[in-house]
Length: 487
Ligand code: NAD
Image 1: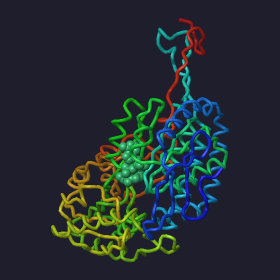
Image 2 (image 1 turned 90 degrees about the vertical axis):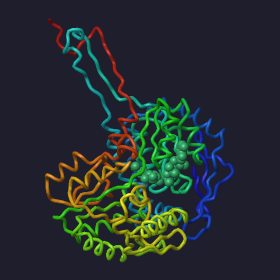
Image 3 (image 1 turned 30 degrees about the vertical axis):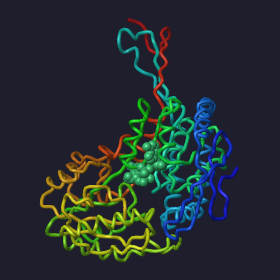
Image 4 (image 1 turned 135 degrees about the horizontal axis):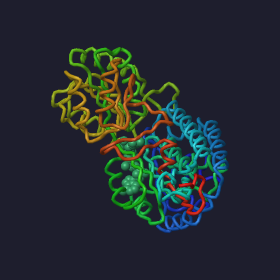
């Protein structure tokens, strides 16, 4: 069963109730060449209704698969995705302008996410509770297990459409659920290829359906009473709309950020600058934890900014299909234009553009913006593009307050060896995680990931997702006890 044809443009369809369905298509143009690279059949209202009905019907069948069987399928899928890394990377380069080296990295992370989910599937369990520890419970036994929630909706953004789908779909299946996937309109073929590989590995089509569309389709799915849990990754505004629509359902929101990285006096400036250059611009900065605001002690700021600008200017911007390219394009021309405009606005108000800023369509030479006003848009809002800002600070307490002034709180980076500062930052920064010895842009797929404030709710990584995708179900046995009954 194939939804992708292998000549360009790739044509992808909706997977509903076990078969692929055509309908009128939406073109995805390469942000680099402008050519149509994929065409996705847009789900109709009837497709959505059929998919929801089928999911409701299939949930108990999927829950009936043994955890071992689910784990075996996910392990096979992990191997297939690893073997298909080049094909996936090519699709990501065509649809998104992501450099193939980064695309292969994403595919390998997705393979690992599948393997991690398999391992979690094997260990889902429950507990025997100490029900007889209190007088009214003497003579009873109480046990729990984690029961699948049933129907899950997974909505993914464009920037890492394969690994983020891996997190949602694999953990949902590991937990024993059926999932309706709504991929981003910018990466339909990459997303569908990933789903196809899972099906090739044995994922039953009772456990997955795919519907292509935009916010309207998303609203139909997230509002449906059939759906028990929604895992959404995307912008804060869309996430808040999902939350309003979801009323009463399990909700995991992974939203935006404008992550801070703090460099302290004792840091190795060369190392910090090199890491900020590399992780501030991977995927053209289109990562929710991309380095955006770099805080540097005032006396060291010029030195740091010079080193950073030098390292950034060595990054190779170009064709995402070339092995040697570090920076491909952004998702579209208007995104690149927006980032450049924000940088120019900051420059007009006194900031220095230390490097970058040439734009060719959707491709933006990476920008380093030094000492913009604290209320500049490029500091306050989520940049989600090829620009970082360098900001001076005078005092560690002050910089913690400054980081927390953001409406977002996803991750922060910290370069210091001072354990008091490390613990203070861990305690006081309003973020989901602090990375010590690195920038904000570092994620391990087996470590809880997620934010606070406008960055979302919930923690994504297989172990924590399985908690969200299952509920605790209790058996209360009144007349038999594993515990002693003598009073
Ligand atoms: P987006 O919000 O525009 O779209 C994300 C997905 O939501 C798409 O599939 C879109 O079609 C769908 N959608 C939009 N409105 C909807 C609605 N009302 N109801 C249901 N679905 C709706 O985001 P994007 O531009 O694709 O991605 C970039 C954003 O995602 C950034 O803000 C980035 O920080 C965030 N992001 C967060 C994480 C994280 O883990 N926290 C990871 C990656 C990206």
